[in-house]
Image (cartoon, rainbow, N blue to C red):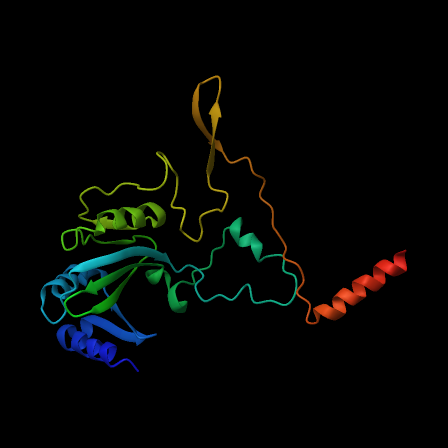
Length: 234
């Protein structure tokens, strides 16, 4: 048991009460905060001496669509496993088996050099309106992190000074890190010699379902049977 982590959970509980939920896993502290309380909690974590989390080390988005589904755990061939990449599903399973209210999450990783302590904050967002207040006014390093989360997951950050795409091309359609984004994308680009410029067109790749091989319980026996079959055919 990590005494430092347990003490940090106790301090957070005493300071914020029921407005946050703190827990220890793998000797790391994770605090779940409601989207409406992000600015209040983050400001206190930065400014109050007992916390002093002056540095935002990382910020990222997470998509919990289909979280917890063990579709790949199979010992036989399946005709549906790989098709998730090309076939839209209507499942509403999201974070921890919950509803669409916890489809997306924003995760913040904080560092306190003064107290030699790290902290993770997690904020869950609804799939229909994934929006949370920007923390650029608290940690300026959040600027491009939030732009990346917006670009890849479509998460909106209220109050961000320049919220626009960061990694994808101009005119890109959709958000490529969402679990329901098609693996082949929505458009493809090529250079048109006649127009002398790059043009965008609908994807020409044919959608197909890939079926994984059968996983045999005893591979040695299976290889021997295959060898016997080949010899018999000869």
